[in-house]
Structures are given as C-alpha cells and as structure tokens.
Image 1 (cartoon, one colour):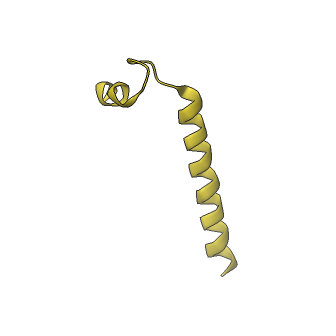
Image 2: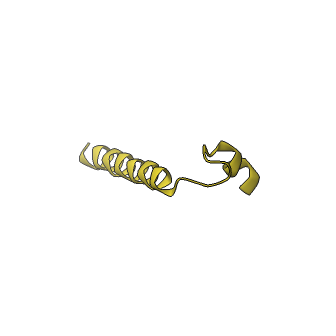
Image 3: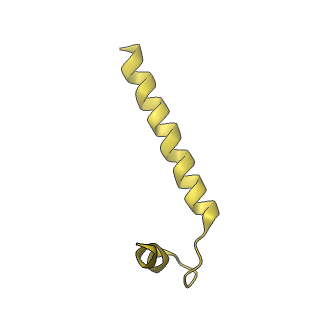
Length: 41
C-alpha cells in the first residue's frame, strides 16, 4: 500500500502532505454539506 501511495506522489517517494490535507479538508466539507442537505429535507 505504501508503494502505491509513493508511486502516485510527484516528488520521488515524498508525499506532499499539504495536498493530502487539502483534499481531506475538501472531502470533509463536501460530506458536511451533503449531511446538511439530507437533514434539511
């Protein structure tokens, strides 16, 4: 699994954690928005 993640990273095995964090934050925002839409309907 680690080899797969590192092969997807642009910096020769170094993961860009700022990018990972931003994607995770975006996912959390989308999930909160989706829950909000479901709850309000």
